[in-house]
Amino acid sequence: MGDTGRALFPAVPGQEPPPMPRLALYALAVCVLAVAAAVVSFAQGRWLGIVWVLLAGVSSNMAWYYHRRGRVSR
Image (cartoon, rainbow, N blue to C red):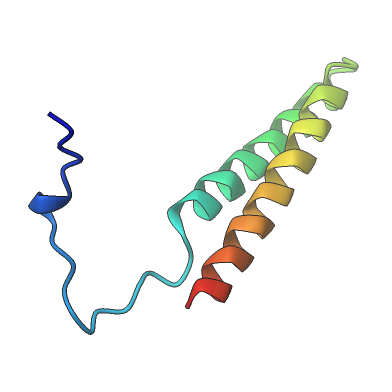
């Protein structure tokens, strides 16, 4: 009970963390996909692209936040 799986991958002393946190990469991927969906939506003449633009804005802010948080923690 309460096992988080950390024992499977113990921390190695002296090992550097990855250059960008995983959440920042996921948010960046969502941002790129949302921009692509917005372009396709607007090209088809649909106003639903506005929702994709808003999602791209939120996810880009999340990517920037997690990227900066990862830099500050190092």
